[in-house]
Amino acid sequence: MGGPRAALLLLLTALAALLPLPRAAATGVFQVRRRFPAGGDAGAAALRAHDGRRHGRLLAAADLPLGGLGLPTDTGLYFTEIKLGTPPKRYYVQVDTGSDLLWVNCISCVRCPHKSGLGLDLTLYDPKASSTGSTVSCDQGFCAATYQGQLLGCTPNVPCEYNVVYGDGSSTTGFFVTDVLQFDQVTGNGQTQPGNGTVTFGIKDVGYIINFACIDADKLHQLKNMCGAQQGGDLGSSNQALDGILGFGQANTSMLSQLAAAGKVKKIFAHCLDTIKGGGIFAIGDVVQPKVKTTPLVAGMMHYNVNLESIDVGGTTLQLPAHVFETGKNKGTIIDSGTTLTYLPELVFKEVMLAVFNKHQDIKFHNVQDFLCFQYSGSVDDAFPTITFHFADNLALHVYPHEYFFPNGNDMYCVGFQNGALQSKDGKDIVLLGDLVLSNKLVVYDLEKQVIGWTDYNCSSSIKVKDDKTGATYTVNSHDISSAWRFHWHESLVLLLVTVVCSYLIR
Image 1 (tube, helix red, strand yellow):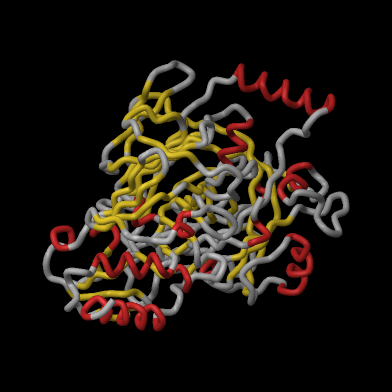
Image 2 (cartoon, one colour):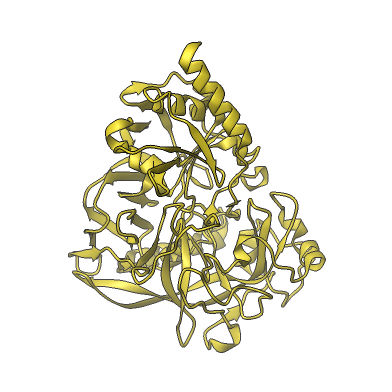
């Protein structure tokens, strides 16, 4: 390799080495066990009771209104509104398919933000103010199932703790409570009525900085005592603060899994993230229009792992080694709406960038707040190629130039792909597809069939979901609950959630 291509590769390598890791946070993931014990009378009884609930249930669809805009120059995230407790109080939580836990800030949290730069009024959850709330003790089944066994030092009536560690060094810890969650149940075209179900979730008690990326459950009590109520990291900032995070992962601890187990909803959900107007569509239930092609989820993985088979740029397939497409511990391809950018293994990142800029080798790159940026006065969609990711069962993800570049004013564009080697050593071999490349597409997660699929779509429009109660199909419209305001980048980067894959988290 020589000439202009070699010069471009050298420039990309030099720039990548200079770019520090964006202030990224990583969502923690909890291990889970079988919901029912295998064998024996207890297991059979539990399974019969479970089947009885399934056969007798009439599953409703749910409409979660979306807000936010997933561009790094805007909010960089999407959030929804939920209600918890009795009487119900409103909470704004980020929707995140890369984690399982629902958690909100607790009234006892030291230095948790009370105001948000996003223009939202934040609410602190008060267990004593809800007549239906109760603390989960560490000797209860939910806690033991969450940690695959009883926590170290557990005695009766001691609260079940949770801990989530983020890639920027910040961490949040608290304890689990059980309370009523209220959601918008679809009852007609664009119509909803309140529905509810009892769920167990975390309430954030304290936050603190630690100097390592992952933590095991045995150290939870030690860290709680060591770090006390010291607040740190992006979660303590009021800049893009929300009330918490709503994880839509596959584990039995997720809100979706709990509502499905109680016969409230189907274990199917869909999102359509709108980068044109903001907000979009987020629905729980069986999407019947539009139809989407699907690809199987990789079995036994904690995230939404899929089988990537090839990548082409402008119709030309990149010649990549086979190991790039293997799935396993700390490798593979993950779909994650909780991540703003897309992270590629270093080799893949370089080859993609070389192909993208092959016809623009005179472009000069700039480091703008840790992003690779360049000046361009024309239409990027006319001048740069489409990138296509090909998955098992002939499902393609087309990523257009306006989806892998994002504008930053004055004819400046920045690259939405990042070198995964700069994220963490555990994530360096992972293809992580985030909000930017998932935007303006309807993405359907069918956990009952263990498939995921998508199609290009106008996320400012509507979709149709099936109501199991009546057999009818109803329209779910797009929302933008943040339309009254807009966040601007100014001097600081937005909160970019990035999943860190830690060895101890593998099921």
